[in-house]
Image 1 (cartoon, rainbow, N blue to C red):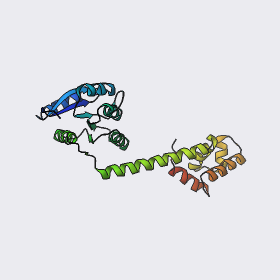
Image 2: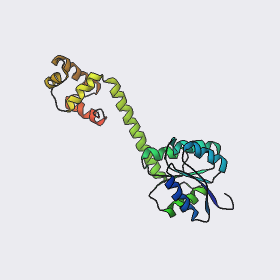
Image 3: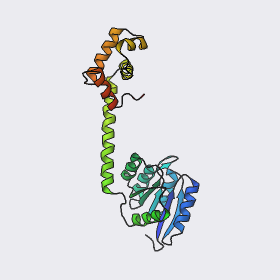
Image 4: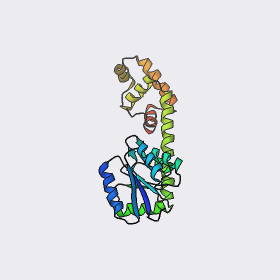
Length: 220
């Protein structure tokens, strides 16, 4: 940190946001903007040239994400503090930002004073993301990944025709109605239904539909 205070690089692909942030930061005597960028590539180049103490950036950028920019910036200047200021409040974005080395992730609705405080704390080496929230987030992400893996596994087991039959089962159609709907024989439908029950480890059509629903297999 220089005697002039905390140097800040701004990254956002909306010019009006950059101008607003420049005014906000300029109102604080201990903070000063050393540059502004509108893309990942520009952010990395400016960070390398201006050596800011803190980078304040959006998550969504035209040529990638703020996480991409953070990873690239910290490869050449690992001591730079990264503060995200974004309208993307998804858990995936937050986790990607943290994995990229962010020390704060703020919504754009935050008041100017809070943003300035976050910049100061980030420059001091603080992490503003509560450990409890992060642990809970990681657990939920891992759970969703497991659910997706299970869904993919079941989808790989079911043939396209079995998936069609399963969807019609979920609509409440019996075997005769499914036979007419798909234009295939009744015995063929019974064979598909039996295969579905075995693959979903179900003992009835109702249980198979319930298992398929929980696994997300009924989403068209």
